[in-house]
Length: 395
Image (tube, rainbow, N blue to C red; front, side):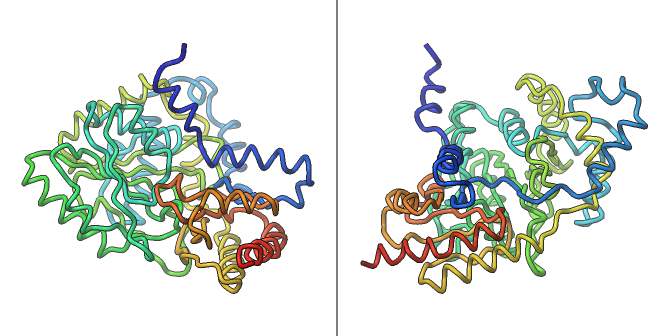
């Protein structure tokens, strides 16, 4: 008999992955060109040419024993130093390699830092809408999970409710900006006020409260939008980063943690993150990918491609009467469902071979997430289908 935790995970599953699998089945029936799959945030842009060049150069120049062998659980020292210098240059910080822990993507990084920080029944707090896997991670470590209600229609964190909900059990606050699923970027004013609240509550409760900032979409921002670097606002911050989106390396599972010296018990946190990396079974981040990303720190996919998709989808849907939150980052459009039941709406959309993820999965019913990291042709095919769907609902 499987464990009780796994029984829950199997029963609840992932709405995103379920839709992804359903899309493949639909493609076999209707033809892939007729299925508009907006379910999975899987980058459809090729990796920059610099990535392939780096891999070839590394394979040619680095000794196999060094490249393919074990290293410190934190990762290669030279890679961590290069990443720290890059962060410092971009955000005017003062990190060194000792502040960096290489991870198996952002998901691996989140699990490492949560394993490091949490005791059973410590509380993780998130802001709705939130990436649904956060709840599963909380269950992994027997943590309690608290959701701050969404602040509609702008979806900045609801700080009034947040302050009321903070309590002595609160240990971790997960932030995700640019946000999955809304594409909203949390403003400097929001982050500064949130940090002020946490400093005040730490003193009141005589506890440590950590911000874990989940940032796989940091580089996916449009126009001149700025994403605040949260370590500059709050000492007890850990940044989680992944190259899955910025370099289209989702399947390679490579990222890092930034653990500042200002964090409480810095030495113990770093030591614990190293041990967590090992005992969770990662041992260390993939060696070839560590070396590769270190050579591609100034490379990036074509944001203009996603921007054109963003504009085409947002303008097309809003012109039909759909209500959408205008995304400043990431590659998701957050759309209010024309009927109250988001799951029913998702079911209706399937009749038109449109695959969406219900807002319920993100702790915010009455909305759907539309991933536009797809081909422009898919959007062209989808818009008449969305129009027919809206007509059916009105009738």
